[in-house]
Image (cartoon, rainbow, N blue to C red):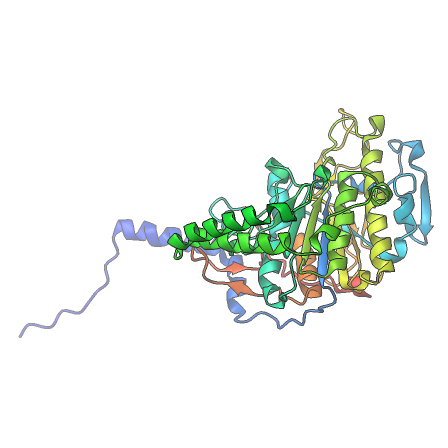
Length: 450
């Protein structure tokens, strides 16, 4: 009687190499499996202390050692007039005379660190809070767009301002990051504050022609009801029309000459004054990102007052924004963040008499929404190149992911949320637990609030 054959698995030479390569790769990727052991993220309780966030983007990367983490040395210009503003806080008074008087509102985090050291990648990271990936860059929404998406349910019938406004962004490295995979209605309204032309109101003499053109546009769009592109366009146009027909839009977008002068008569000053108007209008704007370009001072940083001019523009605009929001009672419901994409090289100036890119340490400035001001968090070494004290409970550098978690929290948004139905099929996490190189498990910077 023939014995039944038993199955004996066979392994070919090709299969051996295939399985072996997977095993070797898996060994080296083993640290990346850590989150798989966590089936649910920690439950978070957002603060909800803000109605709006204003983010001043110091595009190009401000030098921490010449501004908010001043380090004195042979390189320091004598006219910086460095003073002790309050115990433990020294600032170049000549650069920040007004902000020096507003320190009671401010917290300086001197233990920030960036992931990227190149403008395009670092600016993308600052605005999208995700590592730039060529395969996903078009679908990843910006921080402002996620906020607009999350807070859409809070909009009222009387709201006429867009939820996300971006001011003074140029193209190239410093362009504004848009809505990605989210609907177009969550994209930014781009405004060039330097133009001074914000009259979106349809004049009575033009109303009939405008309405006729609007009707033609609706008939054209009705032919493409199922097309997402046209639905996004329709949503954008509906929002634009609501803004144009509002009786309050002229007041929000009009700046008197004396106001512009008080804010510094600069593009940054105009943008901050407009941001103040939007906050005070309470008409639906939740996130305002303002760019102040020019901080990429590789060459002759001190000559002809290049850095001093930028700092004084920031000082005048930022300080008056604080003063007006505080006087109007809105500062306690408005979060203000001020930082760039990275810092600058410390110590002596380079051979080009400037400072190059430096991601190991830089400073962020924060105010409003319940933040307990008049303090410094974290510290750097004697020349401002490396972090010497983290200054908060996570005992590591503060990353932009932590800043984003704090922004989300103050606006009442759960920063651990995810979106599954993306074009690529990959889950989009509002904030990822890992950076490009390690796990950081970001969270709210609770120490800001005392």
